[in-house]
Image 1 (cartoon, rainbow, N blue to C red):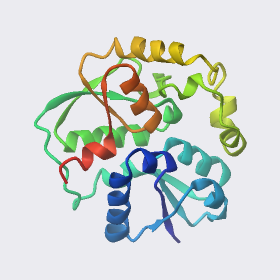
Image 2 (image 1 turned 90 degrees about the vertical axis):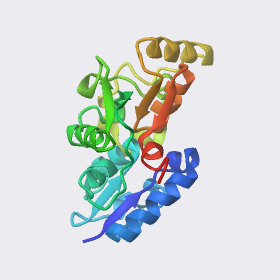
Image 3 (image 1 turned 180 degrees about the vertical axis):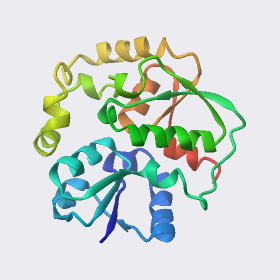
Image 4 (image 1 turned 45 degrees about the vertical axis):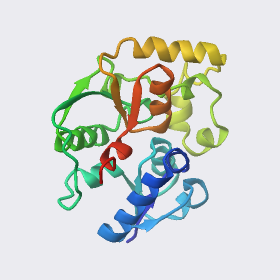
Length: 216
């Protein structure tokens, strides 16, 4: 049995230093095998393997097109007694759930447990958990064909009315409209498109991994 970590091409490009640090930590702490892009290698895993994902697209692809058991990175970290969780002194931050994992309650709960361990005062949005339909501007752009091929349940069957391309200015207006309902400046996300969308809407979007490693 092997445990593989998929560090996400998007997150690695978005925050390369943090990505390198979490990869080194997972290798040292758990002996995980660090993979590259999920698309070339995910189907090679067996039913005895575990894929640990930080990206919700990677998780959907591994869940639908491999035999491996899939866990989010947050489920691994939530009970890790060795990880140096920072103390953020009850600072209020809004939590943005991601549509790409709207039905992955274990992941959503793990994110909240991690924020609790960081002493964050979490502000919930009305459209949270399974109600969220947010993933930044990615849902207002064309669907990536490979995502549809590898994970048709998530990206085709369950995405009716989504992935409708809109002009850039309209995308920005939609992000500003979304952020007008958020009453804290800082917004924690666990998805790169969500983080970028929140920033486009005028708020301080922070990826949870960057928050974890901010002072570590």
